[in-house]
Every structure is written in C-alpha cells, then in structure tokens.
Amino acid sequence: MGSDATNDRRIAVIKLSALGDIASTLPYIRAMDPAPCIITSPIGKAFLKDEFSDFIVLDKKSFASQLKVIREVRKRRFTDILDFQGNKRCRMIGRLSGSRVHDVANVFVNNVPGSELTESVIAKGTEAIQCGKRERTHIIFNTGSSPKWTSKRPPAEKWQEFATILNERYQLPIKLVGSEEERPYVQEIADGLPGDVEVLAGKTPFPELKKVIRDAFLTVSTDSAALHISKAEGTPTIGIFGSHAIGGKMRFPWTVGIYDRVLYPDGKLPIAEQTPGNYYDHVDLNEGLEALADYLG
Image (cartoon, rainbow, N blue to C red; front, side, top):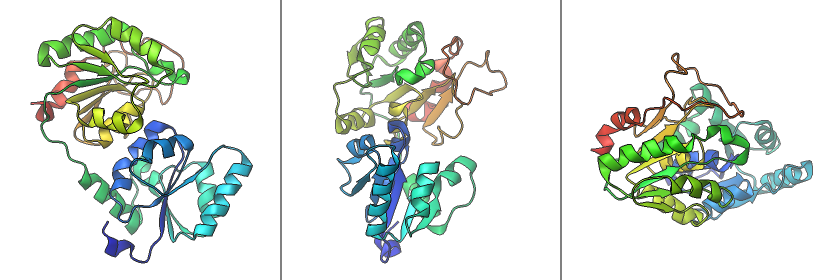
C-alpha cells in the first residue's frame, strides 16, 4: 500500500493476542506505508519494537487499562483501525474509537470480502514475502508450547525420529528455539537428538530469533510462536498438529501442516484440546518434506 493510498489517512492496527498470533500479522504490518500505530500487548511491543516505533500498549486486561487505551486512541483521531484480532476487547476499542474499523480477522477466518483498505493491506503483505530455494544452513526445531498447552508437544521419541530423518537427508545442524521457561524441557529433548544440536531456547532476544528463523533452511514446529514467525519470515515451515485444528494457519505455499492420519482419517482435528494424549504417534515428517520439495530442493 503506497503512500498515495494513505495520504489522508492515519491508520492503527489492533493485535492483542499471544506472541504467535501477533507474529502472524507481521507481513501485513511490514507492508504498510507509512507504518501504522500498533495497539498491542506488552509482549507485542517487545516483539515488534525493533521494526516499529509507534505503539499504544494495553498493559493489563482490567477495565481501567482498557479505558486508558480507548482514551489514547480517541485522542490520536485515527481515520481507520484495522482489527486483526476480532475479540470482544478489540471490538469494544474499535466501537469507541471514533474511527472507521475494518474487521481483518473476519476476512482471514471466514474468507469473506473485506473493505478496500483491508484487501489492499492483505494483498501487499502477501506479495511482500517470498520463499525461494534455500541455502543449506540449519534447521529450526520448536518443540515446546506454553505450559497451558502441553497437549501441543509431541513426545521426545517423535522429535528423535524427525531429527534422524533430517540428518539422513540434509546433514544440517538443528537449532532448538523456545522461551526461557521452556528451556529445561527443550534441553531434555535436545539431549536425546542425534547429530549437531544447539539449544537457543531462552538465549535469543526477539530480533535475533527472527533472524535465526529467517536464515533457516527449514522450520519444524508445534503450533506456537516460532511457527508463525517462520511463516512470516518466508522460511519453509512444517507445522506439527494433533490437539489443535490446522484451519487457515498454514496458508502460504511454503508452509504445510501434518498430523496423525491414522488417528484422524477424516482430517477433523480437535479445535483446541488441552488434555495431553497420543495425538502424534503416526505423524510422518516425510509427508511435510514432500509437500515442500519445491522449496527444499
């Protein structure tokens, strides 16, 4: 979206969710010219501040914090607000903003037509990220998830199987990413993997995390932040699903979601199951590698 399209507009975007969801908006925010104000959470600002400078931060979920944000939004008199979240909190901020609100989340989730501004932002963001054949540098493993969603974690022996397949095929170092709180779990997984393995969990600030994923040959990840960062950075990405539906999460051609086709022969995975279980016994990494063959060579 060039500056001619936004000459008389003062635009903000809203995205208040978890880190992975915030990362999924990155290509679209990057493509906006001029850069918008970003209404987000503290983790959102921490993730985005190396690339953007204008933020309104919802510090807490309390009514007082929301009221503070609404006052600041009204004071700034944005002509348009792009709502990438679509939850009750964001809709309330939008309704009380005095601005035109564009429901971008609904366009993504339900594939409905959006406003002219929404369609322009989506088109420019999609066009801006490309994925050609990759340099054979390293492979990213993201084995973890937040403690609330341990159901997203395949067992250690599954990661050992994945590493064995990748070592035989590519002979590349594997770098394991994750948060500081995940580090003991990630280290335990890493200790059982064959080949050249490095644990980066808890060691990489957000700018470095984006770069190490951007420079990777391939990312293999649970449904968590690294998966969405990898998609946004144009890195070939295999998402491992079992306790959560894939939905539209793997919408780019260099991304694919794989799951246990024995457990789910109809492809109908749970929407969001928190209870740990045997969701990953028959997940076949080769399925993902074949789907991404044009990018991996």
